[in-house]
Image (tube, rainbow, N blue to C red; front, side):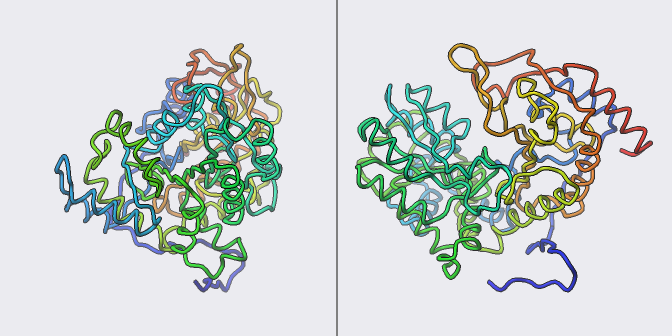
Length: 482
């Protein structure tokens, strides 16, 4: 696709859509934001949306749907069994991924649960380029363990390497030779890597991983939840793929994956998910678990209306003009924050802009959760809700010791086709002001700490009166402004 040229300096993302339905937003005063974040236990997950201005928590289930998706939902066939809607989605999966067997599930973590139950046994290992919170939890709950073998460059926060989500092939070979192929439940490839800044994996690396696994008769499982962004990055960053269409790249990725699962809350911009494969033995092994945990094989816990929307959404994902807006908005936000000196993950990845909390609030020790503190501070001064992706998103070891994350990131997700550029610029402005006043930010400590997935439910409190001081500074600089 030809690049759009600009006559002025700098590149401004251009939305290839128009807005026809709007939803009113609310920006409450900072004093109410102070009350709200404390009511939420300084956990942005527990904020009520009525107190949130721009919700950058996630892109899961909050991407804007297209007019064609909304129209398709009216055609849904709600038959319990043999639904025509299911057949439509199954056919679309076959067309795009070339996979014969499709099993629906209500979202991505349901797929992870089923795959883990089917293949993870006590003592087995699941190598990954990098873990996601729920993918790791399901493996561990079934008695397995994970090994992260992302390339070393992947943990370098500031970099120019285009595919920081790549798996280290030598580490994979060593892992297999050390433990034996029979100990490897499967190899999980995440495209792209959520917890290290939405960084993509290259098609060539996926091919290399697949070849190693085939040599050892090991199954390759692709988490395609963030595939849309990864497809775009392969198209523009991988030289061998620049003349390939998005559809061709998708099929090439599918061809080096034994099993693909995805959350349609991300891929397809609707609410559901699924698992697909060409291997009948795999299909039959996991089929009964779908019925047990999700529902019958032609709906899998999903509304048929959502299934209609997913079928359309997957087709729209093949359109470069649809999938490019997220990465382009993220790149714009990353560049603008860099100009203000704000430390961010580079190169810009998918899913959202990731602020490097370890460097932003370098005075806060990791045992006081710098990324969580920064998330609370950003909400306080802007009403923008981001997500902690650091040590709070980990969990303690079996002895109760804290497991410190490799990175302390504040993720500011940019759901597809949701925010305007002026809203992104507002967030940039407030984060820039906060960076100038970063020494006012203090740490957090747990007051309620669940053992599993604590970042969802845990409650924390400030270790000092730093929030009151930040509010006072805000009023001093902004006056009566919201």
